[in-house]
Length: 571
Image 1: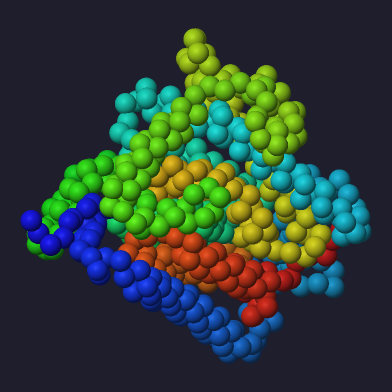
Image 2: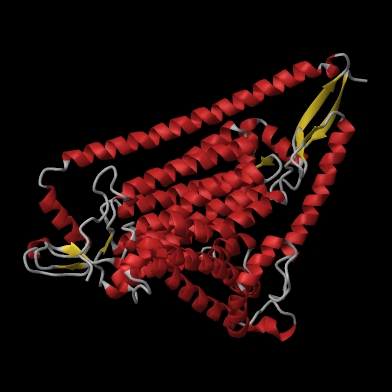
């Protein structure tokens, strides 16, 4: 008999030596403490380096802005005219889209709020506290959008995917991505065609930062366990997301979008769908390649847990119960039984999570207090949706009404998104806050909160890969489709191939920040050995706050004149 027994614990193998070293608790604790400090030190150093990188970018852009101060007045007029599709040779006396000339004023940019019906309050009333009414309306619309998207739109998309016999990967990259990103898509559509502002771009960029840092941070902080990730799906979505952000930076770098640039973004998304179609083959190929390179170590590790690509074993040396206390496994049999019990519970929770998508009456009173408060406040919207949208989840012949459910859901999402952008634009105009700032903060967080909650629930169910991959993969749809498709349609249909202006130069910086966030996430995951825990979550949330603050300061022209500042006087 060997001098030690080997027990399987998660994915790794734990060797328990004989006494007396086995009971050297102090040494084990000191070793674990040292490893924890070393891991925390890596995360802190990485976060500090990232903040320094962002600060250096700010200083670089400020330096360039100072060098461009000579002739700033003339350049500003030309820049605004170019953004409004005006010929530079027609500066004197010509008017164009987004510009007008007032007595005593040089060419100025019309306010986006003028493209909407107007404000139901006066300017003074809005500034004296009426803006909170606008914010409450926006929050209420967020709740209505969450209901119509989750209960009706996504349900119809699931039926469509079943009718078309689509692969799960392809369905997730197309229809289901459209379902989760419908508010962002219609926000961008309204921003391009109606508001003619950068509110859509700001919302997409802010939502992307929210998905990458905030959602992943929340999953690590509140999952209640150490979440192990599989490298392949995270790396796959991250690399294609890097390509998407690079395409966005190239597209908006010159403050205008050409028709062929938006077409390239659309084609990139088609390539992403093709990639997902061959996802199983590609994953098998890369696993075989790594098996050869690593000499069988990675392959043996995956064989230890056959369902590794479907669901991760998330518990390691510590198990966190619901009360927040930590129980350390001391015996091999307890470790094994704890692992197996959690394994079964994860499958049960996953099944329950899937069954929760089945039909539930909108008039069923929820169990918890907060859900009841939300349900009572949304009764008017439940009634409107119940009357106007057939629920294809209901048993019987209602299943065949999914085309009507699909169309009516789109109509409601479009209308609610219009109200949302309208209220945000009017409130921002009254407070002299650019639309891009409102998009980066309020709209981005509001449209992404349902995704955040669903990712957190999935992570708690043991599907860590699904939570992280969904947060990263949805950004691919947001950038390539939610921005690329509206730009392409407007450029070809309404503008006859003319470029679409991007008014804010600060969005280029924000897009570059997007590129750095995913690099930060990948490097941080590599240092933590593809684990999400509370320390990782805290670091991600802190980095999210830093990124959003710097992006908003750019849009507010704190570091230079990057956003439109010569708005026309109010009438």
